[in-house]
Image 1: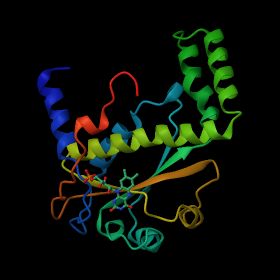
Image 2: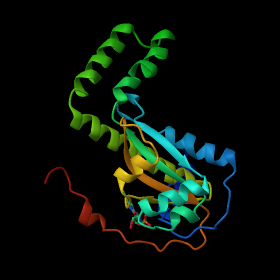
Image 3: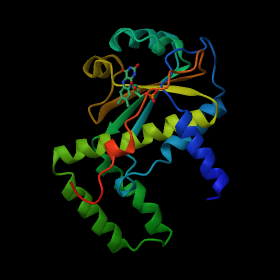
Image 4: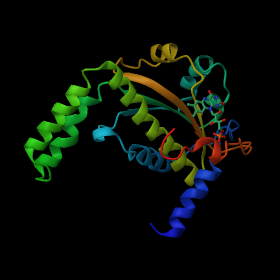
Length: 209
Ligand SMILES: Cc1cc2nc3c(=O)[nH]c(=O)nc-3n(C[C@H](O)[C@H](O)[C@H](O)COP(=O)(O)O)c2cc1C
């Protein structure tokens, strides 16, 4: 990666902040939204199982329905789109679709796929693993969404402040998926206040505790 590209990425990371006030009524062009969602789905994931489902809520009536579930946070109705990041609790079922094409194309021996699938099925015997993996991997996709949006001039706010049970019920989320977070997406009306961060001294531990 060139230094220039690297610096642009760092700039986007530095400039991303949670925006809560949006230009109401702005419609994100379809191709821009698709670019953001494509970048989201390029996130890394364990075994490449892609443990995410992206529920895109752009219908105003649906956003109004979501508003009380998200405790009245107005970015729900004022942003252009709310994306619910869902984690896949049964991502092991994606294994065939993920590895099958590689075997068919001759990139992966069948025995390697069988070995990977056995490993995955072994891990998914444990519900805690399935849940941890769903949340861990879908969270990486969420971060990727926020960075991609910022790089294209849009802003976001990740939200954990909502009633997940009510959300599942109101939006008919299948039991296969666990809600990870909501993300509002739109054009900022006012820039976000820059929240501070701990210094490296406070967060970095060298080699061992
Ligand atoms: C998992 C998660 C849940 C959050 N939930 C909310 C929320 O419900 N409402 C809100 O306004 N901000 C929420 N935030 C935004 C945080 O308050 C914000 O990221 C943090 O203060 C750092 O500020 P910055 O994002 O502007 O750098 C959440 C952030 C994360 C990562």
